[in-house]
Amino acid sequence: MTSEKKSPLLDLGPQFGIVVSLFALIALFTIVYYVREGNFTFFSPENFSNIVGQVMVVGVLAVGMTLVILIGEIDLGVGSVVALTAVVMCLLLQQGWAMPLAIVVTVALGVVVGAWNGFWVARYKIHSFIITLGMLVIGRGLAQIVSGRQNVSPRNEEFTQFFFSTVPPGVSAALIFIAFVAWVAMQFRAESRLRSFGFEPPGESAQTARLAIGFLGFAFAGWVFCGYRGLPLPFLLWLGVVLAGMFILDQTAFGRAIYAVGGNASAAALSGINVGSIKWRVFMISGLLCGVAGILAASREGGATPGNIGRLNELDAIAAVVIGGTSLMGGIGHVRGTILGLFLLAVLANGMSILGTPQDLQEVIKGLIIIAAAWFDVKTKARRA
Image (cartoon, rainbow, N blue to C red):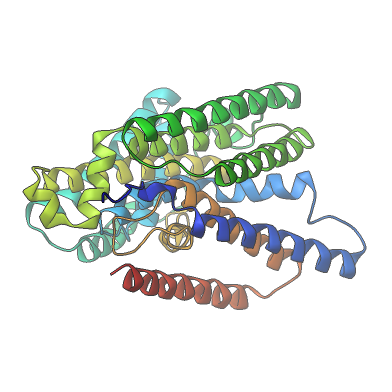
């Protein structure tokens, strides 16, 4: 008797739980705020648009962090690299550089930093915790040095307005509809590919549930963005990053190698995968996305304060990844889960802020959630073993 093959990417249990938790959290804050204030300010297109704007920088970082954690590593330096790249971007614009050229140079700097981290991890097998902990200090120090410990203004109105620019609501509605149709087509194509590879696709009920959740998600996005100012341009940029991350993990040999290295690096090496090369390239991607996040952060803040910008972004990115179901031990997880974890944390923070929860207590609650997610990861890993 032959055993049926089943794709590990079709385990929707953890993601379904996050979706339920996210909707429950939204419902809770909506009810509590209505009881207190007598209005639906929390559950409004304007508030949810603000939530999206608040998570874009960390959202970009979280995609790269997902890939890093999938290979069983960690990147603690992303917040400091955001500070460094934000300062450099502002300085270049301040010196009169054309914005496209300044963007290319800033992103290239992020890639160089990522390559530096990856070199030590891949070549000398030093644990990434140590290397990126060093980068956490180095990046922030370099940001302070090149800025002269001063806030740096880009002196470029086009750049500072980018983060707050939107696509008109009518065009946004058309784009969301096209995206939904494309997403549905991708679901059916993915099912067909699974059959061709010999994997068992999800059952009819699971597929129906996936399509229903997707429809609700796109409908909710349409209500949020078309009911306020339209799709924010940073959101479209972030969406492109997310789709690229999904494509890498789902459609490329590099993505399969990431899972293999994270699942069992020794077995991956024996199967012919260059483990060092995979890790080096993943850290370069993380560095590239730090450059993109630094540009977004500088645009949002209208400048860069080296001591504050990007601070604790690494904590928020790691939290989103772990809460989204990616195992800290590597090999299990996906960008899809990270997105859900990102917005769960964002809704939690926004709701507590609107209700006047002290910032210190918010940090305690966030920390407890991270610990709970890590505990769940360990227990789940033990059951699989």
